[in-house]
Image 1 (cartoon, rainbow, N blue to C red):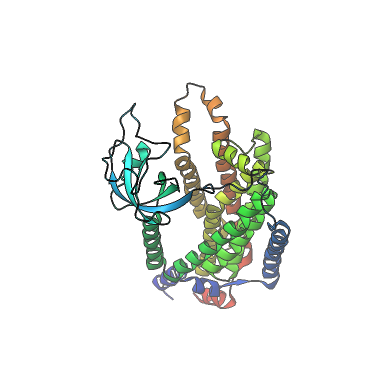
Image 2: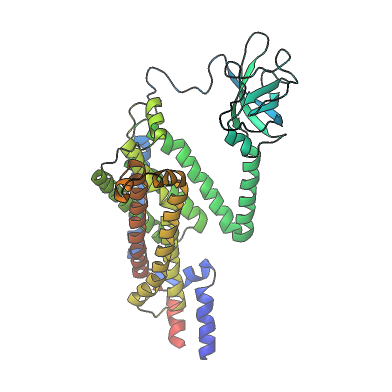
Length: 429
């Protein structure tokens, strides 16, 4: 066979569909059994963990009871904005009567707005048809709030006319459009694989909402909840998106081992840095609402879940690279397969670290801006609780990711052998 024909055949294996590579790669019975038994151990542990940690009780809200968004004599109603006044200048304040400007027939119907006020018509809920006038923060006015926007307001019944207070902008419509564009883009570009990825994403969200958050709220061990959740999510997402194959199973095993390493590193780092898990007012607010929370456990769980997506990305990539190399070059020694795949893995590690770093930077941008204004030594600034948490989160996720790449690559290179037909075809070339 000519050298040109051989190159074409190799290229076809390297960039063909997953099924072609899977057919050209054979995994021995003993190796296959070892991988599946290892995965079964993780799955059994996750099932036991889910049963053990399942939140079958309410969080401990203390004497005050669960937090309420409205008192007994108030309720949330929906209103459409009809007029928005200019934001108040520095030193000025919007006109407010007893915390809210009255609306309705007995209120200031048709009155001109002062700075910082918004007029809206109640469209759903008690007081439907009322003209509600209420102040909003300057940043709300400057965000682009305009006539026709839907807002959620708090209605406080009173003699004569109810009073209204601004709660939030209703953003469901805009979010639905954004979600629709995302779904269409994924399905058009990635087709069935993208659609299955969306299904896996939805199932993963269900795990977080129905198990992870409730379990953490009742004070269960954060690392145990994280490992149980991560295993359930990854089994569902990876097999749903990439199908049932040894390639997917190797990637899954590498991901779960990487998750375990990340959790252990997070525990060690948290102990060494003496982090409490409460570094800002959000944590303090949660502590005031729910008693008995393990905030250090919450931090560990957050560390594990944050790096889950990137970790899975590198492991499935490395397993696929090994499978494609083995399919394209059946006679290549395992050591050479590993070395070739690791050259790609190193590039992937570098780009993934950038992803983690800038993702955290973007999420904590306002905090970083505030810290940069302080006239203190750099090492002292990064030792503050909120920044140390982000640094620990980034570094532990990155270390787990880095270690998962050679682990997954080595495991895949060790297991993947050329199928007999592919070996015979290579021998004839």
